[in-house]
Length: 486
Image (spheres, rainbow, N blue to C red):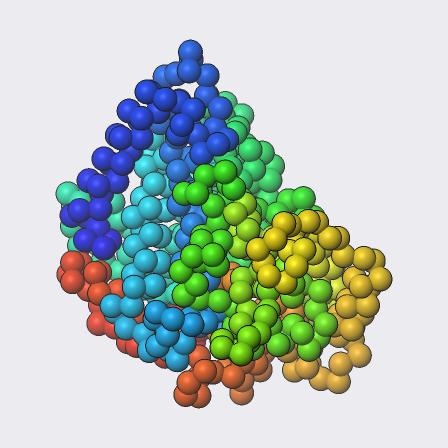
């Protein structure tokens, strides 16, 4: 896409050719600091997969850590432009919006294309484990595109000869494809005859097949819950998947960036110390401050001055050089369980899962590094949350059985999930699909739009796609609903 079948594919092939040559010359310099390949035992088969997987994961991590926070994070009131594209703060989107072009282009030309190449290559190399991991990443990248735009190209991708202008598949059919990708990935990951097995070249799990399998099940649950308004079986299917999903924070699927190389540091570190076009929205930090939420100093460093007023810079959790970015976490699994239990059995039954979700979030976030001063420039130290603070907060926010109405319970559940899922795409997906629970609300949590009376429901198709793919449909605008949002 983005002139995709005409220009990007040859360009990406050249990237991999250059990468191969570069690695042969100097194997240690192309390892993204982790890959460990014996230079005395290099074969083309092994080298290609060992180098493509870390490349894929790095591309994937950058979309999650840069494009998503600046687009979905902005739409959902968690980030805000303080210079540059400030019109995006009030939903002045359009086909030429560079942030959406970047998200679309990076997702297709980097993540999906690279994953597709590994999947195809793995078939001929007897490397089903590489194929399974790549299918999981492909599924997440595709789900981000489909959930954000609705109908998107899928089935005719990466076949320039037959499909120079790939058609836009319906969101419903894309979601079926996502579930198939995850099902197939689970099968691939159970294959014990794999000739090649990822280890240090897998930046996310170091080749831990069990954790990748749990991740696939967790993602199946996530994408089943996207469809609760249009498919009656969604709760049961999600519940069944969660039985095999993440069981603790030790299973969290995250991509961790590297501090030692400026080109591999977390994108929000570069944003915080460099361009500073975006920051955390102070309305979001005010929400946490009002609740005395212990996650606040990890999410944002809030400071004030006479010239700039109150500013909320990105905090140490996601803007240190070696910060990570979540793909899916144990806390999200527990929030999903709480939602399903609430829908099926009511608030009393859901309370335990809900409290576990909050606890998992606090333990994940508050066990990370924290600035030793509010300047956000001094050394970092690990300041673990105390059991007293943990218990007090969980009791203040987690006792949903005492809330008066089901509407109050739903508001509480998704407010806490919104906070826990800071800077992640699921905040917007949750917002749009949860109109099911409180039909008179625009979505959950209850948010005040920065402009007009409603938040956008999708993004415009990017101008590059419109200009170079003849199959691009007429755009319905940012307030049109996607299939599962009807």
